[in-house]
Image (cartoon, one colour):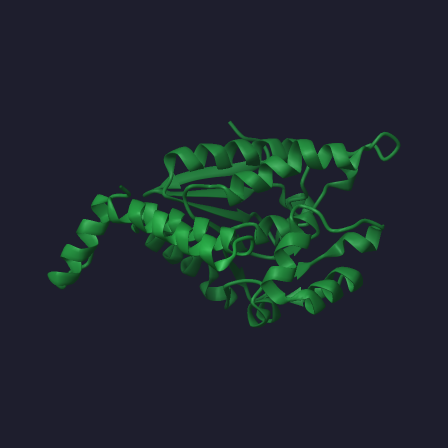
Length: 256
């Protein structure tokens, strides 16, 4: 069904693997199309989505051999192919984890950072490589980085195109966790499984509230919290969570 990615759905966890290891999972037009289709599919049938890469890299960014530089219209490509992809991730009704197994560069770095949670192997690195080829950051990078690590660090990372190790990214707040390589696969699968068993309406509320908070004043955010809490409080998951707490047992959430 897919030629540039693989898709596996097990126990509510959809694992989407970028599968062009011979080119460090560079983003060809075909890969972008398949990735978008897979994310939309996973949004409909999974309780959590994991994005990861095959081989030694997560994603090296745009495949420069996949374009004709004489006729290339980057603005058109971004609007037609990258913007829908990033929006499919950020607007997912279920949590999205980026399991960054290796280098994430250029648009590949920003694809990873679009996820709700980023877990990286300690050997992984993030590189805002755009200026190395005379371009500016895209795929949402200029949005994520200043919010995650502050203007000074974001500016330096993008101007110098420095390699930022997973450990440094975690220390700065760019990602959630940097995990020893030997434990990486087991760890992100455990994290994904935990989310797949959780209260999905509450998770969507968390995502909605946090993503809106940068554009809201306090009154708007308080009103949003109240609305989202009303929605969560009307679910069977809330009733199950309270019952489990009172009965001193693990909750069995159903996602409604």
